[in-house]
Structure formats: structure tokens, C-alpha cells
Length: 321
Image (cartoon, rainbow, N blue to C red; front, top):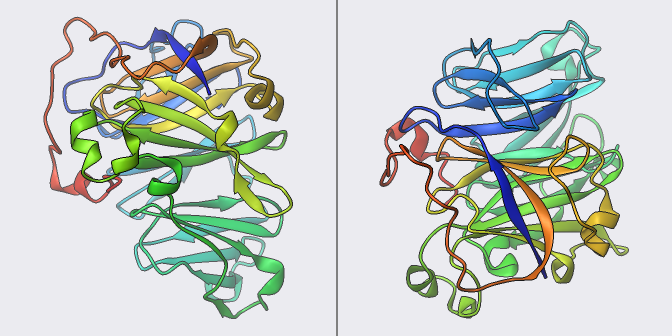
């Protein structure tokens, strides 16, 4: 396993403000946070650019619309976008454990529903692995893959490739969403943010691992979907005692980077970015060091206040465990 070093950090947001998601967008980064704001960020310096926008109440989801705009959604059921174009299919996820797939070329909502996938647990993230494969990750970190070619249109489907709880399998406390692009192997972020002593009670096999870290682990078809844990990349310290909410690769960080572990520099074309509940976005690059079990969290930024536990009941349901 190789490790990545934090090479830059954004200014912290106001106290008790979480970064919910960060995505690459053209030559910039875009983030949403728990103050219901959307921000543009310069990836070279991670400085916030002018024009912070209030999106809508309870924003929690951010997706790009090609290279012309972004789409946001949240707990109030509102979806907003800055581009009139839509994709061929979209997904709707909910706490009832269902993943609904719609054809957006059909105007009638009932007719537009083409398939229903029953994960069985409250859904935290879902997405497409291919044109016909859909994954679902629950709030209790249970992962499942569905092949929609096996599902007649209009019928519910309650089976799939079930991986179960990923935490003991990937030696972590929580999962960040699966990240992929057209030329990138899907990559999971598997994180831990507590002290080593507190983790031993939950996962006794973690004696030799860093207490606080984020591992980047690719999901590969060999020929079945499986995790390439031997070639994981570790971000030691991650965001300290705070949970990592989002990660992204700026540019084409393809499968060969995770396999050959070539040096990544903090540039627009090949940086790793993470956003956390500390309100900070960090940039990382792979180093030639080996994983250091004694490495602590990142250096505390001057003026940043220490916080303990969840601050609002509305955010509690998004805690990963």
C-alpha cells in the first residue's frame, strides 16, 4: 500500500459547517455545504472564488450537467439545475430502500418509471457502473450491484450481487460514495476517523492500521466485481477526527495510477480532492512512502474550532454509522 500526502487545504468554513460534496467542473471545483451554499473553488490554491450562491434548503446532492452547469437536490424534495438538457435516464433513491429508474423522455411520471430495485436498506448513494449495472450503498454501508438486463421493465427486483457490510471487508468505519468516470475504474473511499483504541472494540483486526485515514480502493471486474485492496492508496490522517463526505479526481486519474502508483502532483489534471465535516477541502498526491501506522491527523489550521459530535438532528441521519 502506498500513501498520499496532503499538499493543500482550503480555508475552513464557518464553525459547524460541513462539506457535503465536491466535484470537478471544467477548470474549477464546485462544492456544496451544510449552510446550503454552492461555491466555486480554484483547484491550484483551493481558495474560494467570488460568487458563493445560496442553493436551496437542505441541499445534499451535487452533480455536473456535462460542462455547462450543475444539478442540486436536497431534503426538501427540490431539484434545481442550470441547464435545460436532461439525460436519458435518471435515478431516484430514498430511505425506503428502493432505487427507481426513470426514462426522462417520457413526460408522465407513472409511465416514466421503468424499473424498481429493492436494496432492502435505507439508501445513501446509488449510481450506474455501466449502461446496465446499478449499485446501491446504504446508510449502514451495505453494498449491492444490480444488473438491469435481468429485470423486466415495470417489475420490482429484490436480488443482486450482495457484498454485505463493507466495513469489516475494507477495514474501515464508513464509506464515501463510489467515484467513477468514463476512463476510470470505480473507486471507493473507505475511511476511519476515531482513535485506534475506540476502533478495536468494533474491528479487532485493525491493530496495525492507522486510526485516521481514507483508503482509495478500486472496484474491478475480474471477471466478477471485486475490490483491489492490495493496490489501495492511503490518505493518512484524512480530515482528522472529522468524517470525509466527498472525494473526486480532477482530470483523468485512470486505473493505471492506482495500479502503478505513479507520482501525482497537485495540478488540475491529476489531483485527488477530499471534502470533510471540518469544512475544508484538501488536495493530495501519492508519495513513495509506506503507510505509517503512527501518523496523526493533518495539522490543525489556525483559527479552526474543535467540534464534538453531531450538531443538528437533521444531519444525524447522514452520519455513516
